Image (tube, rainbow, N blue to C red; front, side):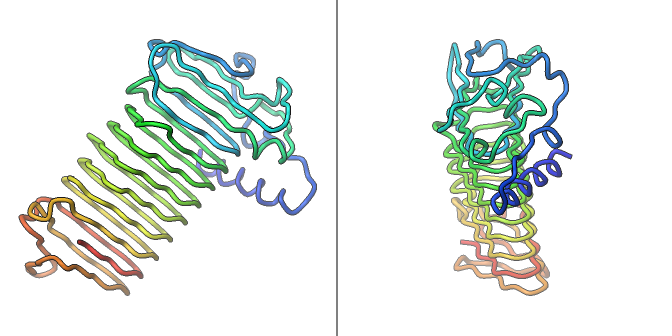
Length: 288
């Protein structure tokens, strides 16, 4: 449901670029308990928050980890009224952050220039829902679970440590630097590439309808990749540990410069420690 709303919001934004209309937050972003939210920038104590939920419409979201008294702020090239400002509510140990007052109409000129900066406690659970805009990190993010849902726009996370990561994107590139996940790293993208420089995870699951996939794998128990269209490039940090690969393609090639032992539909590189399954409809797969 979140993804449907996000795609709808992104579509409204795109349509508004071709006409002089005012855009309303009211239909797709209306939220309950609106009277409990407070407008504007704020600070909070890290010990009071275990989960952060952010719903952001356009512009950018910049994330960082901090300690002690943490700040959340937004900036805009144009002056914002109280109703147009970010709204927030500390609901028990859950911090909820919304783009504006529930039902408030905003012009596109303000919507796409609202930039949010959030300092997060270590090991916090983060849910981030972005309709259109970019998501970036300023430092290494230490999170519990990380759930990113974006309809349009890029994401660039330099370094991330988490228990579990789930990413759903409709359009736009998603890039990670160094990732360490104790559980599952799960990415589902409709259009737009995925790049991970180096990842350590128990399970890696990537499903792409369109767009290239580039993964640098430091360690993993299981890897599952499904791609309808677009190239897949995997780099194994430990060639000796290697992988056992099941490859299935409608139209596509498998390339590797590494030594491979074939046994039926199973290809083994090195000791075959990673259980890897790759299915593509069309595209080239390279494992190095």
